[in-house]
Length: 556
Image (cartoon, rainbow, N blue to C red):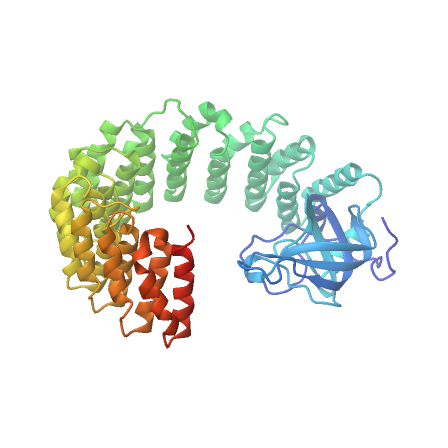
């Protein structure tokens, strides 16, 4: 390690607690690990003064808050990594995207990772101004950071393991969390965590189980952690039992042994644990477990007094199957359960089955009449996917166009559009929706007459959209114009209708039509004379957009 200044070598108390408050963070991150843990997981750690800022995307289009900015540092001290007298560190442009807000001439302690493009850091690391780095510097000053990277990491791990025996609970908990973040030497760390679980407080046990579960997932052959994790399923602490369930649910390779434990946990005295167990069973099957499980405990939990538990149990049953059991359960829940969350789970589970049948459509139609907005919306999503079995839903979708919830109305239009490929009745309802009293329904319908460049009847679609071009709502007009633009390659009459709107007295309409014609490309050749006349338009934006459209149309 490079020689440090006397200030950095001052004898300060070693701590594993987080440092004092640093810069305000605009992005969302979990709290960074303590200093020595962060040192162990970083590829490079140094202090230095910012001497230059460079923007590699300067002058380019598409720059966002995530776009990179490079800062050059004059390096003062190095604790880890192959770092020279100067180093360039990249971060995101904005703190909103977790970019670190370095300032020219200020001095920072930087925790960096390295990838093929170079060094990187962000707000979610322990990188901070030197005025906030006392705890970090204290930890470094008292740690042996000589030797190879592997030797340093081994010493750091052993140092943190030693803190599991501290008299202070907060230090033990911080140490367990740090060992989870560091991820080195599981052969040493996991036995120490098992020991902490056996002798520790509630907070110790929770932290030990969290770290042990993570390490057991990442290093399944290092140490047998299963006896301790299974014991944690019966821990006196509800939080610890939940943590154990969550960690175990990641271990697909041991699912045969774990799934029966989750079934037992469905009978836990805590509703939060029962719900977590049901969600864990769902995760196991969603991640690929195809073994057998007894559904009896889940069926029992469907009678649970807690809404969230019933909802979780239903989702798990939908994943586990068989479908012949799930459909009647959904029917019962929709008819009887008083909780909107559970009824929503029922419809969502039904949609997840991806079954098209008359029975399923009938249940979705029932859901479309539910008193809860979210349930109705989810039912409309399912009806849109019902294909050739969705005919019986068309009358209910017609009524849903008057729903008090705008999102439900929009989804009803989408469902009618999807079903219009199968049913003339759905197509008629979609065309009629262009004359609906509510503007957002008319706009949704105009935007769905043409789907992915196709429609049920090109001639009827052109006529309907021509009428929508006269709508008093600009949003309806916009949707209609875009639909006509998509029809241009198949229906030349669509271009003629758009050309008529180029003489509209409103500049925003002329601007819109130019854009639509330009996107239509060579299919809109009939519009060239009218677009050329717009070279004298009083609005400069319209003139520019017309020129762009002409270039797009004439590119072939």
